[in-house]
Image (cartoon, helix red, strand yellow):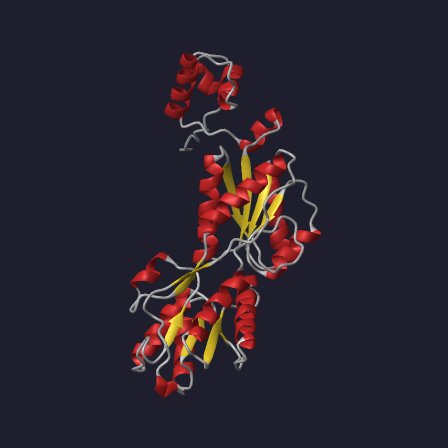
Length: 340
């Protein structure tokens, strides 16, 4: 026996239940001020009763406005990109917009193009790119996109609509903090080398050490995970020739703290550790983690503000990088005399 497929409710179903014309339903959906409050209430109740969801693409054909912002992200579930998207969604909702989100299936150009094509098929009014690998932005520059774009990247290149926390400044801030505590043997655990943020943070680390006249040691490459921080810690701490480590994110710092405990290295009395991001759990590490805070809420607010300004035709918008902030906790301290 064939199961009958139940179709999704449409605008005419809403009109029938509310006892109005479908044109009236359309005006309610488009927030027309000409609708009487009682009529609007009946239509909204019918929408809720039926579970009706407007089709953004179909709606855009009629109104030329989908009130939808497309977001292209990588498949990464890392704290930074995920938090950026949450902040963008919150700011967009406050402005009366919704998000259409898709992720790239791979790092290939074809996958990036497919993601952009999908979002454009949803009649999005603008795009936000939260895919922090350099090749993604190179591909975006090659594609012809007719809507405003904000890219969350931090290379310092002249990229259309770029916006980010200043990653280089954040890494300098982290490294300078360790230098000011008297540390001279400082190592950096970096993220994957195809990530823009990883390269920027390594650059800031190198700049701070060079400015202090200190040896720039080759960074240890991790993959943002606590496991990679743990492995790096076992490698670095076995020789006992470092007094401080700047981890490229808080998860790798967590793994490093695990390795230090396992090897009997006291943090912060024998080893100072600083992270990057200020994830919610960082304050509860053992010891609580000194780190660099990124203001993802401000990033989301500014990204949406840039989009809305460009949609209004206002090109005088704020593209300045968001400054990072040093958060002092208990994982860093002045170097002990036995280390000098």
